[in-house]
Length: 150
Image 1 (cartoon, rainbow, N blue to C red):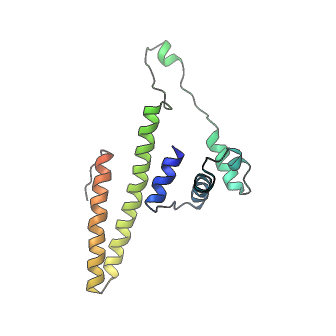
Image 2 (cartoon, rainbow, N blue to C red; image 1 turned 180 degrees about the horizontal axis):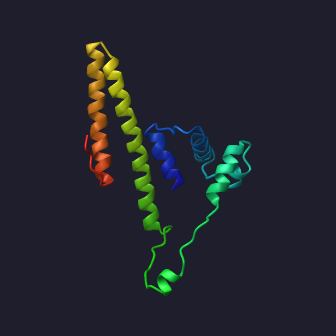
Image 3 (cartoon, one colour; image 1 turned 30 degrees about the horizontal axis):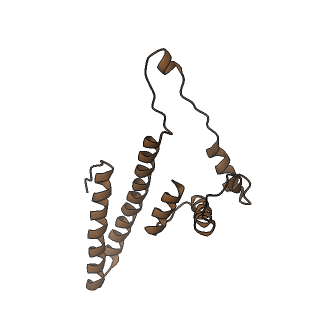
């Protein structure tokens, strides 16, 4: 899954706005592309960067678990969130949501550029890019079963 995520994000030339998340992503990317495998957990938990250490340790701790009473007492079966089907769906939706967020930010940025642009040719270029970005937004929103109002 990590290789898929890294490959998809790199292919679309996306990056994280949060520097810490970008640093962690870069570690994964470097291991996958340079060594052909995933980094061990200790690469993060023993990292020179204390923020990476802290975040990785926090993410590794699971404070919650589903009670057995749901099934025993109330006969309600809770699906395993780590099942392949659920995990694949979660990964796909998370990646699409990430891309959608980036698209929305780019659309807003272009709208600001368009307001400030005086050159007609540059306005046409920005409007052309906006049309493509909005179409991509519509496609991704549709895949996520979200309604686009703008």
